[in-house]
Image (cartoon, rainbow, N blue to C red):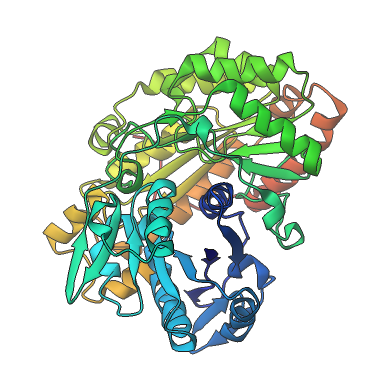
Length: 502
């Protein structure tokens, strides 16, 4: 069969600037479909739009127009079109695309997949333009669906992980078993993408810019065993973590180096270091093969799974910056969130990482439903005291399927118009703090971190300790520029909301 997989354009509120990330899920699926004998084409309509923004009525549409997408469909003449919905905020764009495709050719089978679909596959089938929804891990379910469609058979009830319509009734089959051995999957084929449309350099935020170009993304594992209140990834992976073997991982790195001249890898795993021995094995295999590669885990890595020995090994294999998901500096909040891990260990590990040349970042979240301003102060204080080079402070984002979403729903704190929640990302009121005050808190935390962490001559000493080569020197000078920029030129700021220490 001929299958066209589409990452759709997106519509945002106000003006927007979008970085194009390689759609790894669709790349895996398209490569897998090809291996089992079907024709598959991947159209990243967001990236192919070249960052073009069309503004209408306070909204910005980014990506290819419908007319441009239709030309791809006319040329390829697909039997099946799969549309990815990774984020609830953009589900309307996917449904609009499905409607346009059905209007163009009602015979084309429309299949939805992605994180949003996995949270509520039944809801996605309420659109008459959608024929099937694949929820959870997609490869095996999609394979079985194509087999049925190819043979024109309609006994879809035996396909786990599939939602479909039987007459007017929506049927959601039991979830599919997860793939036991991820080494069985083929490496995602980057040749199916127009690499000129992607920024294979900086794909992250603020101070986490890459050291080398081109930088390619990889995933060495799937899932996460944690039960964090704010996370909805379990809708896809069901809290089951599986890792690829060290040999398989490093084989892919070598392929990226050989085929595309990759000089850096960004590992976008949800939880890369769950298996410490596997993590050591990946580093040892990279060292054994003498790969000249830099790498980092921009999504974050669990500090409680690491120790000094492993950090040294990671550094030797090419890791140069590391992001820790701290989320809160308050012990009670951390326990509530689902991260009851030792902050003293996190601080010690951060300081050790700094001492051996890493650039360190910590992610933090404010706006949990029962969090107080005192607890938020502790988050800022820990970010400053831990010695981390960069701290990112985010307001809590609500995603359907995440446990914290249900709490806001139960408490009656969700906006009446849920569409606003997903498209405009408003800051919601919590038990103790108003939404508009959370915005001010976030701003003040950013300002105070930069002022207190990088306010004096010790900046130079901290940077010098990270320099082990000329490449480190060049990178450090670039980072100093970002420090100055985000530190507001080191001007003295007057705290308005967060003052003093707890």
